[in-house]
Length: 174
Image (tube, rainbow, N blue to C red; front, side):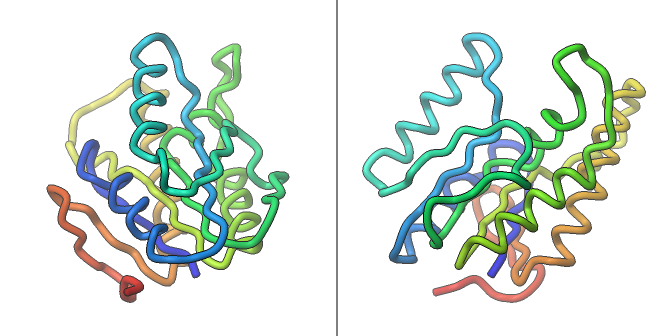
């Protein structure tokens, strides 16, 4: 089963995703794709670790190449998040740009094959109508293509609006 959680920034996607994971017994994996840059990034990572403390997650920090990741057991995995993974796959350490769509999707497919439940968090981007640089526009378009493909694959799609889950497809597990 795959559940896709989407929504704007700071709308409660992570908290809700973690609460979904807690509904299931068995191993829980938190797949952290955010590459921390600077003190702000490190602070965000510390905050998320603190929020997960005591919830029984095994954290796997991995920034790229989810297609080759082998989980240690079947269970529930929370992938946080597609926006970070897309940026990591799209821009290499020299700033060169690559099309990340196939890489990200094949990584999610590989994870889904290893899990009883995969909860994927993504961001709703590109709806503000503001013009951006060529690179940012390409990034927004890539996330849009990835999100559409993931929504088609997912059993459940849920948007978080001001912390309130709104089911767009399927139903949430009890």
